[in-house]
Image 1 (cartoon, rainbow, N blue to C red):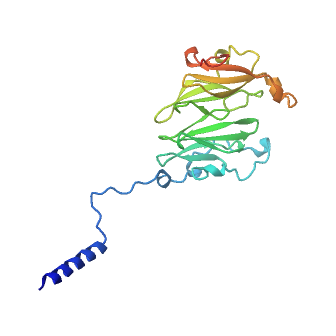
Image 2 (image 1 turned 90 degrees about the vertical axis):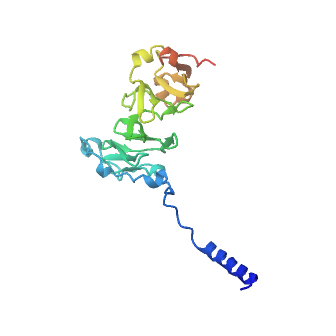
Image 3 (image 1 turned 135 degrees about the vertical axis):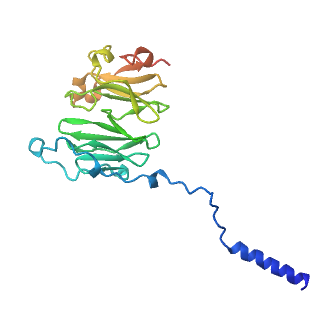
Length: 255
């Protein structure tokens, strides 16, 4: 057989081998699942039943169906009795919503989806449920929407209302742990935390100044609740600093 013929046979063998599928190595790692693919859709039917069902005679007809904001529909589901939110590990965390009338507004997510904040309204009740989806999951009520520090390691909530039916009714700070939240400042602690803010009972958080101080503003509640003067209500600057025990005082965070 001539050398030319051997060369042509060799080239054909190479081409045929290249068209065959390369077998997978047995020790090759399997493709990793994405968190979305791995997480099961939450099922509120698997949650514990609420201790007290909704009383339509006392609170009036309830809107049906009770639905969560569409933006979090893939990770949060309610059946009217419970709100189930999927955890990052593929489980779920439940919260009794049998007394809630609805979830107005849009939900928000924080910490790359670890936290989900959902505002709610009930019969003379309102607040914001914050679901921590890390680990086994947990739920806290921050009253108004939560405000995270620049690093995301601290979360603050502040809410005071004339009716005192809000979900927090005070000022609270939580430390974000690898799994779960630890309370740094509990609410309500009005006597100690709001001691330097007499006469100003409507507070809002403006934002964190680093990790150790929070800028706020306050105004008289009667001015805020009067529709004719709400926009003109005097706003006084306040701050709360770690080195002062997070007590709210007049002024602003140090530069």
